[in-house]
Length: 380
Ligand SMILES: Cc1cc2nc3c(=O)[nH]c(=O)nc-3n(C[C@H](O)[C@H](O)[C@H](O)COP(=O)(O)OP(=O)(O)OC[C@H]3O[C@@H](n4cnc5c(N)ncnc54)[C@H](O)[C@@H]3O)c2cc1C
Image 1 (cartoon, rainbow, N blue to C red):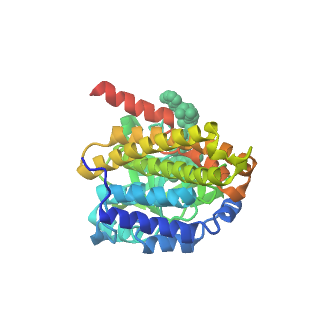
Image 2: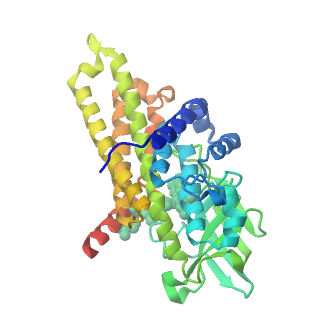
Image 3: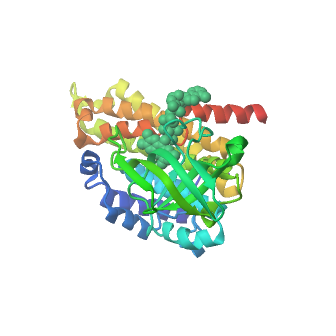
């Protein structure tokens, strides 16, 4: 067992840290206020290889491992979790989904552009009546011979208004339940595909979240991903990897808040001394450091499982459950350490606190992670 990062991993982490400091930090408060994220920054992340981190270079990707993915996600999330969720969705849900389950034709046509950042991807599973209970898909994809006809509504879709390519999960054969579900590639601009208004959110406000409407959308048969009826398994396996991304996002939010709190506590004076010299504050820092370090080990373990070819369904759920809890609890503490200054935007910690909450909700709520973990324990 080796806890050291390789030289290459350190270089990758430092490149992401440098990008986050120089490109993401300026303007992060304004983007949060205005609820927008500029296309130029997405393009720059593409140029750095952050949009297709684990994709094979033959499809335009960076060919890095899952450990590198976690390191990049942590650094981006310390500064801007809206940027990192775009990266996470594009990498773990869209690129991975296509690389692992798509046809060669689909990879050549879509993956090569998604991996370089030329295209942005979205993953469309959730619906107004199918969130945690994702098997209750109401969106239908009826087989019409040479094409499928998609009808229904997807909500909460990250990159919803900005994406070029949408992976859409829909029910083809209701009688077969989850075995009658398929996944499809839908291109932006397809007739009958409408993008609804943008959500006004508590956190990750720079990310682009929309409801999508499908009215008799014709999708060629060659755009179905994998065998007929494999869409639910596709979605669940893809989300397992997605949870490594969201766990590392949570880790970054927590460590970003901790770093700010530590620095502030060494500068701010009260009762004649820096506040870090008050044991109540020092103990908060000790708890933050300890639990963030524990979260980091769990996130790395899940990434390592993926890199080794081990099953990572349980380890990714464990990592997401714990890292998101740590992010939520310790961003609140970071605000507390900042006192009144923690309550204003200039000091960044209030944004990190708002951003932390989503990590306990998307890609499976914390309650759903406990279901995944406990089922796995009982089966073992
Ligand atoms: C900002 C944002 C971005 C998102 N991005 C995407 C995206 O890109 N693509 C996509 O497909 N989806 C996306 N989602 C949707 C997200 O994955 C769902 O919101 C999430 O899975 C929860 O579903 P729900 O909102 O319908 O809550 P519900 O399923 O209605 O859950 C409500 C509450 O009940 C609990 N609950 C439900 N069932 C159980 C159970 N069996 N046992 C115990 N507790 C239970 C839940 O944990 C939760 O606390 C996004 C959501 C948000 C807010």
